[in-house]
Image (cartoon, rainbow, N blue to C red; front, side, top):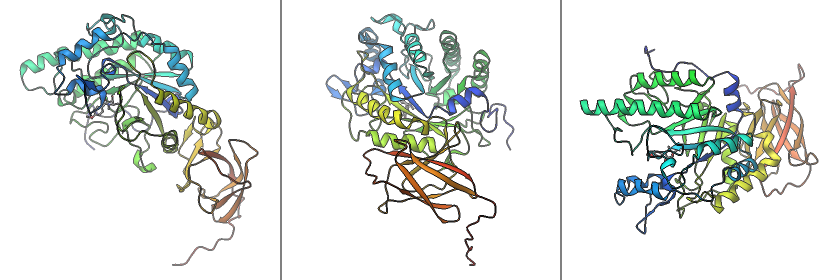
Length: 451
Ligand SMILES: COc1ccc([C@H]2[C@H](O)[C@H](O)[C@H](C)N2C)cc1
């Protein structure tokens, strides 16, 4: 064990009500919106093939020309209630919104910089109306904040000289001021999703970041902060020098999903996912594979089955509307969630052996076990191996209770689930298992092999 002043301050999961609420979300929405949405991956008629929200770093783009986009930010069709209504229909329980991305443009009228919506043609605060609209729909809000700020002249990638140190100390105060400002202006926010914290300049601020995290938690009791905010005094991030998770949940699953439960080490976590391969801000043309609703539903099921939340990204257009592809995916996911949401909300790892046909999710609300079926075996029967001494009492379909199933015990703690009707589903579907303790002595008399 290494003695740490600025490592993890808590071992294991948070067990308070605020974190239990976060753990129960299952499905979230990410929103990336800002000046980068205006060029949308195109500059002087040429397409940038990186992530659209990183276009300021493209050699073809002068930072000054990019920063002048502030004079073109005027989302005349922005209607936060319509975004929140789409999210509600989709079935998301929380939304993570960019307050300031790496380019430093603030979607709220921060007092600590001029580079905000207040000095754009739009003039008005974006964050406040968004928070209000989502709160009205009962969708919790998490504020995304990038520490790295390309616009601020005091930002440094590393601290090499005394001047760097003097400038970066100003930057640290600026960052603290903006974070306390966000928590004060938008007190209903449940947490912060930090980004842009990998550069040496910030990694060297273990003590400062640790005390700032403590200050924010004091200002906002219950605040939820992920593993990406701060490093320990040896520069270790996400997991400290003793391998303990920093913050309240793991933020390392960006565009990737854990394979098995041991990959998550008993921690809370979220997976943030793009619809194309890697575009967060609005990009005029999406290159490569665009994920389908069925793919996204399977990612959602897999995340919840492994104790995580699945957060799908939307990149609104510069006029404030959502693009057609995102609206149709939101609708398809929402239609599925309307029928199957009880298998996703309050979901947790069920402890059953993974089967090829799909995913098990246990509900903390009902103690029911849900089978989320994505692949029908050729045999037409679904194998279930329960944790030992757990028997299956009943099996029925969530889509309609009429679609029922017969469970046949085929070995110790092993069952076949037989559909009593022809199943030719066009969408992933859910079977509910009601289980109970195996009657004492009812071991089924299965002879253990002598090897
Ligand atoms: C260098 O690789 C990166 C760095 C930052 C990101 C940013 C994206 O712009 C988006 O905000 C995502 C959540 N974040 C990790 C993505 C890839």
